[in-house]
Length: 556
Image (cartoon, rainbow, N blue to C red; front, side, top):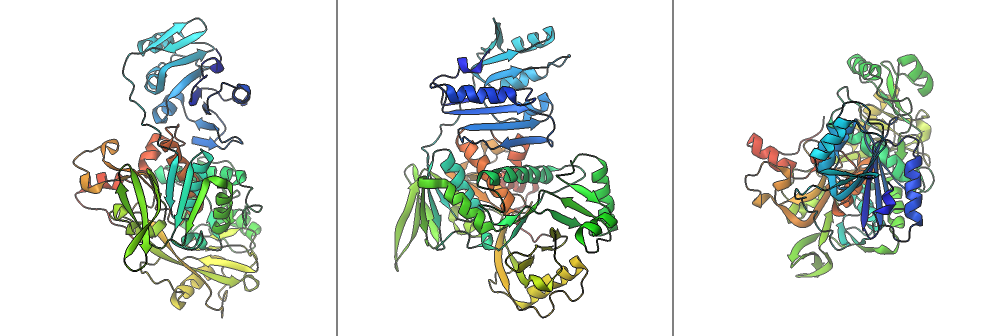
């Protein structure tokens, strides 16, 4: 049974394949789609694949109308976590007694979905029939009369994005790639003027022994960012930076012991994360590493402003820029939102309007009334710029409690502080804090001595759980008593990409992809559990369960 027989006239067609293998079947399907004049506008393929780190992996494709998700998980678990409406199922290699997948397929199957298979046990056929699949010559068809929950209508493909830092530029690029017309509103005269304006940001994964939700989310974001940046031209090419690797020194003997336990689990391939004992770490680094270190070979640094520039360039003519807008407000006008800015002493001007608005302005977004109750803190971060000639020459980004980048343009960046005040000016006390951490990092007591006060101050947007807020903005005042995320009332057409803290480089691409996929009713690039962990309404439910409102706090 060939999927191409059934996709004519569809706007979107989603195929689920239980065996990616060499990728030959997927490649053939994409070629058939490309050569069919009656093809659907968009083709989405989800396939189970070995050889990847656990979880969902969205693989960017040359044609933005084609999406590929590879999933490293058992079949039943993958179906339980998949958020998609499936039109065609390819079952292969399901030898054995497993029948649990039938219920999962029925939950996701679209009306009249087709099923092809190479072999099924009698018990599996019976389980599928019990779930509404009718077997016909050459395959099966989903014919259940149980009502399918209707998909929300895709809004008119016009949106306003507020904020032109990493979050907003990524949102604009992902929307434009899906055929949306986007107006990007920025209070400054240009992009990347707030936290995204630093000379260097580092990118690396997060590890934990229990592979918890923050670890899984960070891993997914990191791996997607590495692939996504290649579509923009690559780090060190179109994007200023270097994929030179990141070495994270163990804090002490206890941290080293915990790291050895993680490494002993064998979950991570060498190119993703490698634990180095002290002698080898010191040989590679050329500096002391008394308790050992992790080496993330695919990590590195990038100048966020150059990433923003590459993303905006990729938007093409679908992007309209409204920069220098100053502070803005949002007002509902019929079925649309109006983005209003100050106009003279007393008046206001309408900068843009659309049914869909994305708040992506970082710490400044809570000044907008509809987002004012989000538990986001603005944490001050001062980075110190140092003459690279006065410091050890590094082959990697080096980090522990602080970080130090290799030289670029004769300047190395060290930092950054975490302060709860709102002072935007460089100050000597923060410089001294950065220098003290730097000296401990490189084991050089006089590093940076006499350095002039130079650097930059930015403000990170941080949630209590340090995870981003991605999705429809909750209407807190109308929340009622529901205990389920999906039932919480939302502001219609209003979404957030906020709370990226110190990981904006890697959060921005995946979070934007997640939000746009949801707007398009397309399969989501993350497990359902991880999607819920990013929902902006999670704090409403947590406050109800604990009896107190969650407030931001300073990270350790």
